[in-house]
Length: 450
Ligand code: NDP
Image 1 (tube, helix red, strand yellow):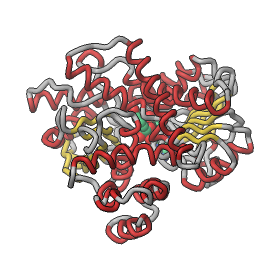
Image 2 (cartoon, protein in one colour):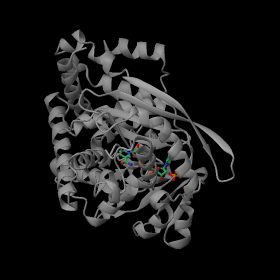
Image 3 (cartoon, protein in one colour):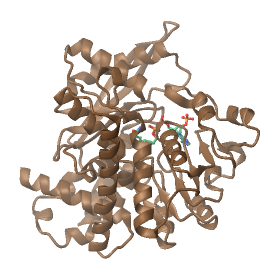
Image 4 (cartoon, helix red, strand yellow):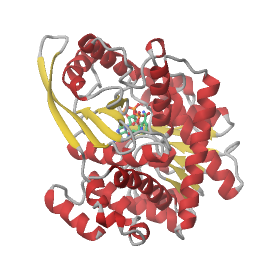
């Protein structure tokens, strides 16, 4: 049945190297033991329905730059599945955005949201707009134009977008401002808002902190190990990477790398977060090359100076690696380098950053591998806390949000490790995450009827 569905998808609209096909294949291929033990999945055509988006919305975004030149971009919102609750998932602004990328992200989001145990469905959206090199006014004008179209499809009980690559607190502020001007509704429809008008404490930090909470629990339970005093490598230099580094440093780990789309920094003394922030925080997009001009012990490796097929960021000895940049950034060659250099755990902060052959290698070599849909779910969990706070007009304390975030990450670990064990694949957290999320979503779809 699984083979037929994948063939049909390929025939209809997807090529095998499409990230959506990659994500669907990974999930469906791990569901065989569940599917064969419950006829209802076939009766209710759950697999066919779960791989098909409820709707895919595409719109034109027209805006004017600081020199009065007119630009047109594509805008999208993919509402994939709302069996468990309102559609929920981020907006990505990046030139690589297209329907295929957003379909993969929206599909993954259904499973991630299900793993949190919270009542949220899955969606994703964004635009091929490139925020790099744009002034704040241009970003504001683009966000306003984007929201003029998007507002008609979203709502606090319907679809609640958040941030992702290229969309941080600043962009969410502009988007929410326009939403309120158009609708005159103060219903908190976006999450990741600035704290002064409805945002939750700890939302900016939540994904990165959650990644570390997950890693701590996994290492404690599986290896009786801690991250304190261990060397870690992190890729990326955006929201998820910065907060992963911040939390790792706060618990005594030494993070020796970070990277962006142009190159990698290796700093054997540990990444200096103040310097990194001065280049990348809050939407700043300066080159990481400047880091090495400020810190004499650091080395900058431009991507052009590193052999094709791998990334410099994964070529340093470490105890644990945290890919936090983007999809498919960690190749089989990188995986082999990490293993050769003594890495015992890989925890995904980004969405699907590890290529399938690299995952296979980690699993076969006994490296603990935590898939993003489980390990990076802390961001969406705190987004849901923001929705709760908005609905009740409350403000939760930092301590309360942090404790709940930690609890959710530990529960996710427990849920997926127990499921992996139950289905005869101990320590295979890919299978554990896919089966555990699938069962929750499928049950809701069956109970709600067709
Ligand atoms: P940001 O835009 O804040 O940062 C993205 C970082 O990745 C930047 O440093 C960027 O470099 C780098 N990057 C982008 N493309 C590439 C590439 N092709 N090769 C190497 N580096 C690249 O995004 P986030 O930190 O928010 O998101 C990072 C990942 O985490 C994404 O996969 C996202 O989907 C996922 N995620 C984010 C959540 C959140 O709460 N923000 C929640 C859950 C998952 P440059 O500056 O040069 O573009």
